[in-house]
Length: 131
Image: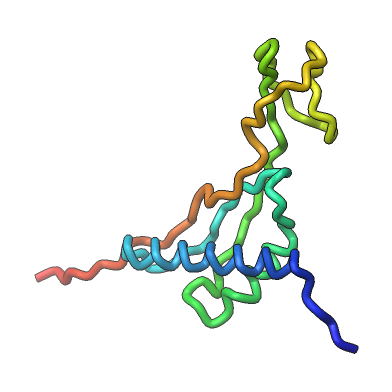
């Protein structure tokens, strides 16, 4: 049976590749000995499937300095602010309506992001020697 990868899964694999490259660049720039964990924040409206991203990350990290690194993903809810009454609220349904005044004029303040929130790193490599 031939199994064709979905376009969506390929999207997450390319994002995982970008994360790995970014983290390896930071590791080199900061002279870190290693990276134990990477924490991501992924918004509910980002279009990213966390499980597919974790799968892609696990597949791509093999045979790299991140092979033992753990990916931790926090899914962030959609938060909006009403332009009419300034009420800030978590959007619980895909109907974007202010629960206070029923306005549909909203600004999404959170929920579209995908960012590296933190990295747990090993001590900086000591490149100097004591006399």
